[in-house]
Length: 107
Image (cartoon, rainbow, N blue to C red):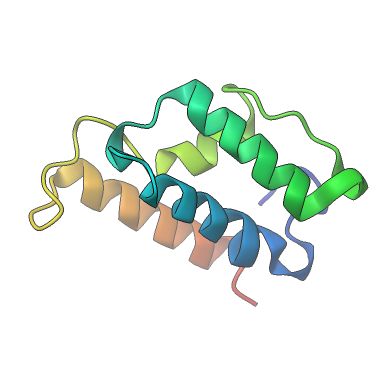
């Protein structure tokens, strides 16, 4: 994906380590659909440092592509229930699924 930092997708680290680790983090929260931006940003930064270390230094802020792309998966408030997702849930899921499929990450 051209908006992500160069090198972050090597060895499938983005899709096989970074994204699943963040999803695991969100799943551990009391209210996974409403993780505030600062908590999310802090978690993403810790995961980034763990996955990429000093080889790929990057500061995640709420206006960076990493934050925007990952946060899009977890749109707050508008989700509906887990058993009956609302239109935003389906739209978010389909957009991310298609983005991963068409971006060439699944090699």
